[in-house]
Length: 260
Ligand code: IPD
Ligand code: CA
Ligand code: CA
Ligand code: CA
Image (cartoon, rainbow, N blue to C red; front, side, top):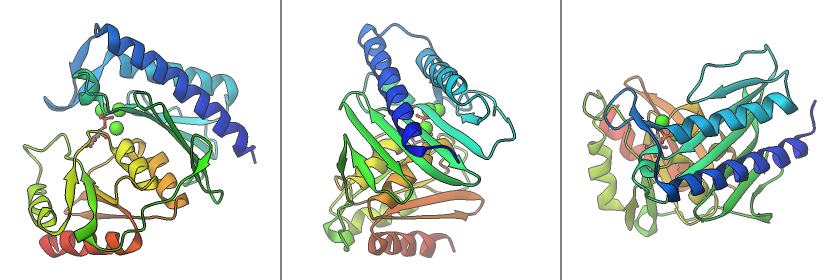
């Protein structure tokens, strides 16, 4: 067993270093932008540089660990430990200089996330959690808002990149939920939404078709901050809902009533 406290220190260092670089490059605003699967699925030169920097540091410190990151192939070392990285969550925001984007780094032992770190460069907020040891923002313990009724709640969501050809009608839950809540936010970064739930500035969050690197660290942060994260699949599309157990079950009911 490795010492998880050491991995948090390393992950925080990597996230803050990469975040500083992202912020500087954004100010210069001179980087290449390419599309991937659809016209809204962007990857910038900075996404790739960020992932290279994080992978190099992990390889240096834990050469025997597996590494999974959004922009590169899975590095399989047949280890029980796997690092799960989203080097820049919120690429569309970044490409437009919209200041909400994050670095998300998680570590899994076998199939379970045991450590997670998220850094928001433009807010200079660093979030971290070790399984069973609580969630922290810049060293101070954080908690979810513990709201129990949708009508008093600020809710976040996001839309998948295949929105034009998706079998799932994303607007159906959007229309229903909007009528039941105090307000709806779409930040453009799932990791940002999840730390916002963990720290109580957003009461709950739902999104279809997230990938493991989008939520690995954020899911642990929400759980360690006293929240619930529910995952299922509807018509082949993964669904994630996070918040207090009451809000998760209200959102789940509205969404499942539409599709199931
Ligand atoms: C995306 C962001 C966005 C969410 C998308 C994700 P990326 O990640 O988290 O908020 O709606 O589903 O793919 O591509 O910017 O790392
Ligand atoms: Ca992406
Ligand atoms: Ca992402
Ligand atoms: Ca990304």
